[in-house]
Length: 298
Image (cartoon, rainbow, N blue to C red):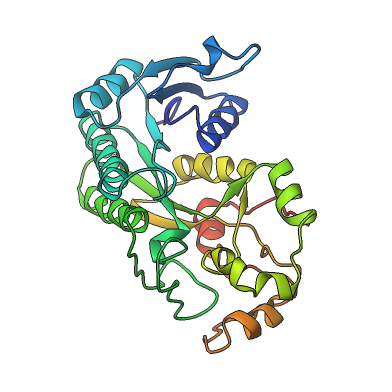
């Protein structure tokens, strides 16, 4: 079935907004399902989705009704609590997991072609937990073990397990992608944080840099995040698949072999990493989604 109309939940957020723009630029009809008011009502010259439906993502009837009313062919679910710091643990877990369940259940009942759900680098551990992320080998890929401990990381793992279940069903949605995003940033944020900051070995290996280390020094430009979401509904595959979506390089201004020696000295390196190569492999997304990141902070 051809995909012509796509719903994006959380379309007022950073990634959701970029996805809507990406879809609009590729001639899809777009529908923004968001809890708050439409930006088009309050921001002058804002070019958003073709349709806006105010939606309570924890209300299954509301989610089903919004998707049914908008007559979409696919859904990209980006409405989630972005970290465990702003809400108590059960709220973070409940919101992220149950909103995903409601979206996938509605997508199944409405026989949508494809669905995308929001996972994270946190699914394998840190940076919001103690002890730090458990790294078994480098570069990390989709088969790497997961060891979430905080409410946010556990919710991302549960999202993927939920998608596994829907992916095993014989009916629609026929393809589901969990996108494992790192910190997703704009050009100006990358410039301020990395290009204008101290990314030397001494800086990134210090105690204050543990947050970066527990994200495997990964990041992604928001435009690349939007492109991989579009690719995940367009490319042909069956069932549920996990995909790492990170930039090709690290956030450190030090060659990757030196970074590994300093921060991951005892971790097995299973394939060659040179220059400023990322510590996470995007080979699966390259092969199955024909996607690769276009942006670097360098």
